[in-house]
Amino acid sequence: MTHRLQPRWWVVGVVVLFVLSWLFSGCGTVRTHSADRLAQSLLTADDLSGEWTIDPGPDDGGLDPSGVVTDEQRGLLPSIDFCEEASRDAKNAIDDLRWEAFRQLDRTVDDPIDPPFDREGHIVFVQEFLMSGLSSQLSLLIGRLREGFVSCLGDIPAGEEGPGTAVQVSLDGVADEGVAVLYRIEEAGGGGMWNVYSAIARKDSALVGLTLADVYLGELKPLVGEELLREILDTALAKLP
Image: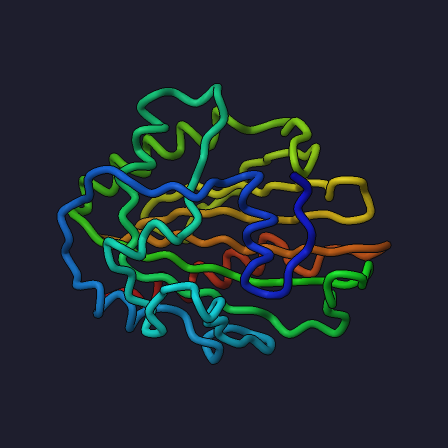
């Protein structure tokens, strides 16, 4: 099956289905903050530099506009899917990611892609995931996830999209601890790139997951980089309860 660019929310299905998958299951962690409280801490358009808008998702997406994620809705979210080289322990850690709040924001760009026939421009968005738990438990979880991310660095073979590369990004000084990776993936058939930052960071008893993506077609350069990732992550961490 060949993926094609879709507007706004569903572009994540194009980007993330190659690097990530649509699975959430397993046991959760001890919650230290309510889902409502975490949802109140989600990023808003006013928190970010530039012009951003909250993306409510498709009409039939089934997610709460408040940002609260119920157990039933959690399966609608994208999640990590490690490569074969990752350990069983790292892969099992994915099952312990029980996100309780979620939001996507889309950035207004000067030259947006207008699917399906426009072949030059950008689509830029950020997704934020929040969950809470005992700080010691979350620290162990990040350690297992970090092992999985590091195991999958390097070349990414071609699939429905690709080929590409995965490179670790430093989060020194941003959070209590965390891990981040930049995925650069060629569009199938050439002519475009997925620039996708995936980060997970802990502050005290809360965990933040960020996906910052820039999809660009044509002879263009990426609009987002490590500086913007750190800026957004700093802001998200500062808003945590």
